[in-house]
Length: 261
Ligand SMILES: Nc1ncnc2c1ncn2[C@@H]1O[C@H](COP(=O)(O)OP(=O)(O)O)[C@@H](O)[C@H]1O
Ligand SMILES: [Mg+2]
Image 1: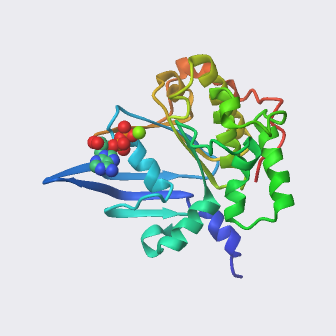
Image 2: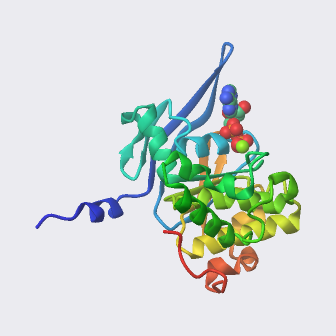
C-alpha cells in the first residue's frame, strides 16, 4: 500500500541544515558569517538561538526564513532544498511557511493595526472580507481586539510588537521566526511578549527565537548557541531558571484555547 503524501511530509523534519556556510565579501576580505552549521528542527519545537553580537544569529534566521541562501551546504524546508527553487518559488514558500517578527516591528506607520496584519493575506489574494476577519481574529489572539483601528504611533512598544506577532500569525505559517523580539522593549514588557510566545508554542506553533536574555534561553526546552558562525552547544536550557516559563513546562495558560493551524 502506498503511504499518503501528507504522511510522508509529516515525517520530514521541518528544517534541516547540513554544513551551511554563508560568506560575505567585504573589499578584499571574506567573512564567514556561518561556518558549517548543521541543525534539524521538528514541527512543534520551541528553540532559542543565543550567542554574542556578530556570531551569525541573524544570518542563520535569514537563511532559515528564505530571505537569503547558503553559499555552501544545504538547507531543506519541509524536505525542499531551497537551492532548487527560483526567486519566485522561494518567495512563495516564504510567504506560505514563515512568519517573521523583528526587533524593530517593521510595521507600516500610516496603516492601522488591522491593515498591517492583513498584509500577508493581500499577497496571497485572500478576498477582502475574509482578510479582515482573519486579521481581526489574529489581533484578538494577541490581546489587541480593542485596538484594530490604531496606527503604530498610537500604540506602545509592547502593543506594536503584538501587532507584528499577529501579522506573523495571520496566515497560519509552519514556523515563527523572531529575531530579538524584545530588544526594543523594557524588561517587564519583554517578559509579557515572551509569555505570548510560550502560549503560542503551547498552542502548537513551531518557534525559533533569537534572544540576548540568558534566563529566557535557559527556560526554553532547546537552546542553540552560536559562536563565530558555528554551533557550540545544542540542548535543553538549565533547569534552575525554568520557573520563568511555566507555560513551557506543564502549566498551560487558560488564554490559549486553540492552535492557529
Ligand atoms: N550584509 C553583510 N555584509 C557583510 N558582512 C555581514 C553582513 N551581514 C552580516 N555580516 C557579518 O556576518 C557576521 C554575522 O552577523 P549577524 O548574523 O548579523 O550576527 P548576529 O545577528 O549574531 O549579531 C558579522 O561578522 C557581521 O559583521
Ligand atoms: Mg542579529
